[in-house]
Amino acid sequence: MHVIAINGTRVRCDWSVLHRLLISARMNGTFILAAFAIASYRPVLFAVPAPYLTRILFWLIGVYLGVLFWYLLIRAIHLILYRLRISIAVINYPVVAIATVGAIFASTFPLNLLTQSNFLIENLTWPDFARNLLIAALVELLTATSILPIFLKGDTPATGQDDAPDPAPRPDTIRFEERDIHLPSLLHVQSQEHYLEFVFDQTKFLLRGALKDFVALCDEADGIQCHRSHWVAKKAVTSRKRQDGNPVLLLSNAAAVPIARGRLADVKRWLKYHRPEI
Image (cartoon, rainbow, N blue to C red):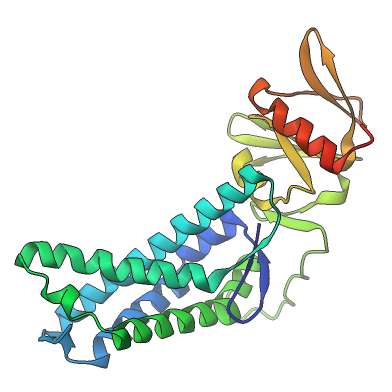
């Protein structure tokens, strides 16, 4: 799945990069600055005078709730698109806006319960929503233009290093666990306990990781997960048959990859659309 940021940048949804981004000092510093900005805007909390520290803590909780809701929404959208075999780019800001509104209500409801009133909800105004949506847009813009590119390139170089930055990954190359995976030469990925075996035209190697994280980086046109432990590339599949009564996919390197019975219908649909000659 690809995501289109507010500045028009289109990026592949790489979960390993996203996780490193969300726990990074840069990203969390941005979240804290956003909470400070909202808390400093007015000396009141929904028309109620409140100490500065109280406002900061309230909005800090709100910001992190917004991030949590955004992450859950993006995960849900990715899962739905994957299940439906739909390959489209998702515009990120509507997801950010929904998460921001959800965080506002989620952070005010507990206070209403504690105070046994509806005062806070009754005092939520359109300017409050507009201000918070604007700050969310600015945070997304800052992330897309200044923070995310660092993580897409890999680890940040240490201060004082004069080494040239690593070249951008080639087209059809994805970044997985700090290594570039060249999809056109990839045939098969097999899960082996906590590792993945990547089989290419001329070589193979092991990387520590989960198959579901690798599959999340790939489009349906790249290949399909035909078994809980196997992913096969589209170009590698030569035929589908049965061996000892069990369905398998035959690959160009003569490997026979099992098809889980629960995934057989999905594999047939995928073959019909992407490899109709088989």
